[in-house]
Amino acid sequence: MDASWKAPTDNVGIGTLLVAEAMAMWSAVQQLYRLYYTNVFFLSDCLRLINTLYCMAKGRRDQDICQVAKDIKAVATKSNFNFRHVPRKLIDVIDKLAKDARISNRPYVITWLNS
Image (cartoon, rainbow, N blue to C red; front, side, top):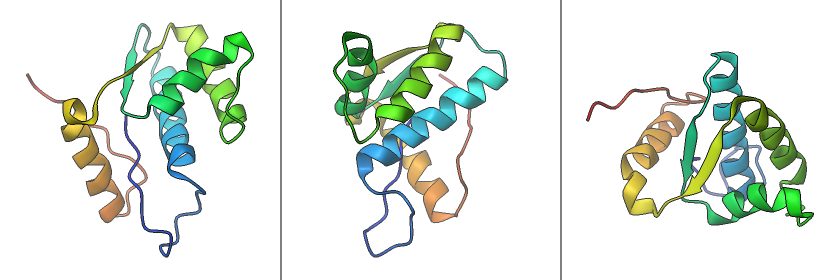
């Protein structure tokens, strides 16, 4: 999962990169939940988002994405979804897909990568 960011002069409707990452995660969680997937690991290079998701239970919250993080965790708990931080270099294909979706004005891209 990755969000692609446009320059502040572009009309994106999202305030910060953190919010963009949270909204991309929320969209991915919703899609897989609707498709009845379970036991999914979501990978993100956004350490702040991953930390926020795991700190929700401990009472620590990032106010920028507090409500979205609560929504993500509520759905994730139902389907045994997990979240892991990985360095950007390990998900460069995902980053490219997110950027391609932004450039072509698609809200998201779903693709299956063959190993």
